[in-house]
Length: 251
Ligand SMILES: [Zn+2]
Image 1 (tube, protein in one colour):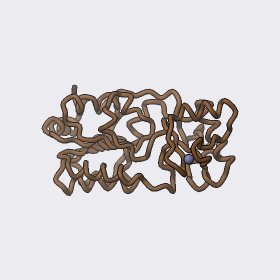
Image 2 (cartoon, protein in one colour; image 1 turned 90 degrees about the horizontal axis):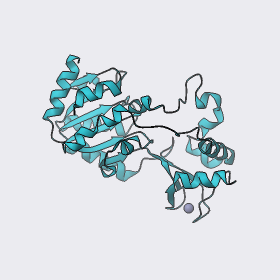
Image 3 (cartoon, rainbow, N blue to C red; image 1 turned 30 degrees about the vertical axis):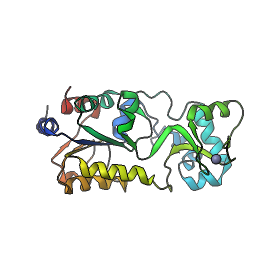
């Protein structure tokens, strides 16, 4: 165990109200799809990347058809399982010190690892649900993919005929205001913020880090790369997240 892990462990053991903020780094060991690498999904299917921008998604039916087809074939977000990093957070919940888990991930792996869904803020939404862009219709992703597999390449909203989309926040879409407010309030109320696997460069959610610090909370950053907030952190911890988190949090 490194010195920073040992000191971080003491901070966590002494905290009574912990907010955890997670990003893609905690899910890397779960075999999430690679988007931008040499064999990445977007590298091989440049058209598919357009689906992540709300303007292309709404404006081009072909972008939607390709996106639904990739999902229906199980090439987007399928077969991913929680890893030791997700499970390492469970002791915080058992000890009653987990105030809120704010995640930038859309994979629902925290819920599947056993974190109480009521404690989770999915600031960028979830791929396990789909919703209508024009009305309040929302359903399980599986129900929409069943329609795609039965021959509807771009299924429309059954309520209003509008465009359906995975319930994630795309580039160009605003965050859900109530979710951001919940994350900010959690940052105000915690005595320790633990940021894991996030570059802390995506705003506005990254701003909860200095916000918590300003309110006197301790700050531990666990990430493979430096972040803009390392200099205000009590401890920064590198290394493999699924290996280092169990050491940091304990049982
Ligand atoms: Zn609708």
